[in-house]
Amino acid sequence: MIDWHARFVQQAAWTQSLRTYLFTRPAMVNPRRVLEVGCGTGAVLADRELSSVVHGLDCDLDRLAAAQGHVRTAYLTCGDALALPYSSGTFDITFCHFLLLWVRDPLEALQEMKRVTRSGGAVLALAEPDYEHRLDSPAELAPLGRWQAQALRLQGADPGLGRRLAALFTQAGIRVVEAGTLTAPARQAPSPKERSLEWAVLEEDLAGTIPEAKLQRLKEVDEQAWERGERVLHVPTYYVWGQTRATGQA
View 1 (tube, rainbow, N blue to C red):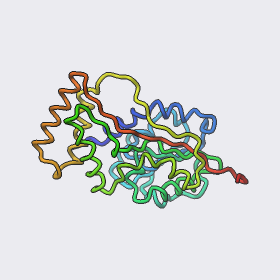
View 2: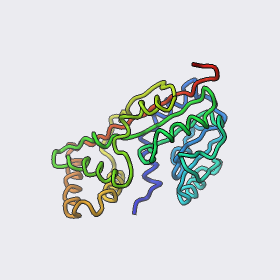
View 3: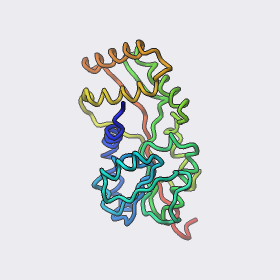
C-alpha cells in the first residue's frame, strides 16, 4: 500500500529549490490569490513561499480531505482540471505539479488555467516528467524505464509529455517566460525509505505485467548498485512558467 502523502511530499522536495526561485520572481511577489490544480494531499500548498490566500482543486475527495488536514487555511474544491469551477481572471498565480501527464487533454487544462488567471498573471507547470527518456544504470536495470512508460500508457497517462510542455504553453496562448529541466543537487544516495517508496510506486505500476520474481531480482540489483555508489536513475523532468497577456497586449 502506497503512502501517497509521503510520495507527494517526496515529489515536492524535488521541486523545492525551483519553487523558491520562481515564487520570488518580481511577477509573482505578493500575489493575492493562488490556485494549485491537482493539489492532491496538499504537499505543495503547504509551501511557506505561498503566503497569500491559497486555493486547491482535485478530483479525489479522499486526497482533498487529507489536504485539509495539512493546509488548514486553504480553500479546497473538488473539481475537474478541464472545467475549472472559478470565474475568469480570479487568480494571480495558477500552477500544477506532476499533473498534466495524467490529464486527458493537457492543452485544454492549460487553457483553463490561463482563463482563471488574471491578465498579466502567472501560469506554471512545475514538474512534468519524460519517462520515455528515463536513464537507468547498471545496464541490467535499463528495461525499467521502458516498462514504466508502457504501464503509464495503460493507465491513461502520457509518459513523454514533459518534453512537449513548452510547446503546449505556446499552443494555449500563454507567453513562455522561462522553460527548463529540473536539476538535482549533488547529494548522497536516497535513503532506504526513499528507495522503498520509489519501488512501491514502480511495483504498483508494473503489477500484473512483469513477473514478480523478475521485479524482485531487479530490486536487489538496484539496492546493491546504490550501496556500491554505481546506481544512476534519471527521469528528465521539465518546468515552464509563463504569463497571460496583459489587457491590450498583442
